[in-house]
Length: 376
Image (cartoon, rainbow, N blue to C red; front, side):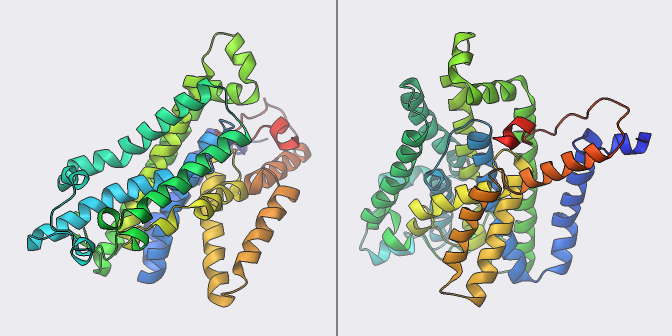
């Protein structure tokens, strides 16, 4: 293999840098230049979903924790940001948020008071999901609850969160949620120029989260997380604490979901219980499964492709697209359990086997499944 080919070999560092640069160019330059305002807004929403899938790839793909309740953390981040934005808009007229006026509320609820401050809302977007995930993780992982029991527990919490939101009409907007959000830190969300600025912000945040997750998994902690996933008892026997390792991964995924929720609110202009329940949480896992739960890039690609397909199918076949979505999940489980990233990895392996090899075998990129994992 030539020197140039070695530098850009599949899985190599320079190959990864080239791929990252191409994706950044497509998202930051090509997409804003070619897409209409409506399509660019849809892409911004998909990028928010990709942040959730990224967190799921960390917790599920690399940590072995099937998180079926990411809607909870997505909602916590979204409501924290929406509460500030609604108060910011109401402050201009000196009144309460519109839904409180309609509900007959005369005084701002105590839980809303801290969200008058932007710094508190931005902090809450990350801290609240992390604290909830940390407390839940400590209780669950110390008791060595894992597998389907952990998945059901997270899903039950998402369902309970939705019930709480719906039941507190005067404080949360009930079933409708917090709607009609029009500004975001000085940006007018109805202005096409400000919408493009918001899109660029979302794309940059996604890139930053991807780099953070990649660095985390490439560190000693990342290798320990995979070791705990493969054999928790062996890691404990060697003197490590699987509880701490898993809690950190769970909190990381929760923080990413919270940030996604906070950016989703200005992109779409609404946050409601319908976006956070059991079905949306399962869809979030589906994004990572289709793209490849063990690959960070695969999870992002899965979120983009599934939501793009969902939009196209729902526009063409409004009453049948849910069947196509279910069939896609069945197909992935039966044919490609490691998702699109797994298929790409198999193609790379087959291609590498056909090429003459003179140097050492290139290392796998961070987050890509190993050969053992692909065969599992």
